[in-house]
Length: 203
Image (tube, rainbow, N blue to C red; front, side, top):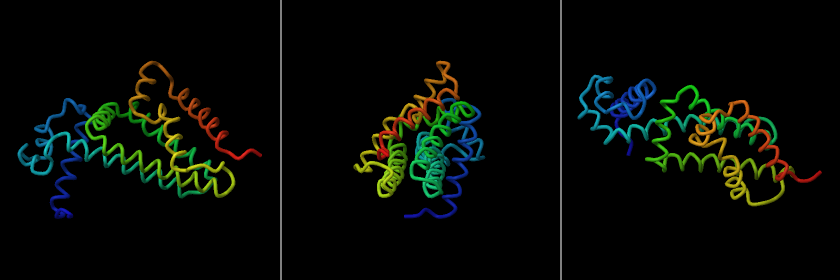
């Protein structure tokens, strides 16, 4: 059942205020009372729309991931070979996660909390990406560019093999230990070269 427009608008306003506070103060330091004050309402009124701060976090995480999903689908539907589009999607996912840590570290903490508290939101996003990759793999197989194998299982394997460049916490760990962003980009390119060599039909 769709909620009335006024309720949807209020929920969006609360989520916008919370996201702004998460960016400025950090997820852990922001309380529901802070969000209520930012919206000019009481905490009890916030709880009418979200049962907890965690639920607000879930809504924001869903919104962020929906935006990335749209970018992934645009790349998948764009020009170029299936291989070129797969590479473009993997690069996009890495850059989005990396930039979140570098430019929006407080928001990165919110994503980390979402991964711990709302795995369903993350899992749906991962499944969407795998489905898109599977479609491109199947397209490459039909074109005779990739070896024939199960596209869905191959997409899962591709996801696992590139996880260190896609997982926000793993990226954060690498960058926190002094690895340069450019070095991570080069490593991803080398990993994609290796993976695509294994997928391609020998000439």
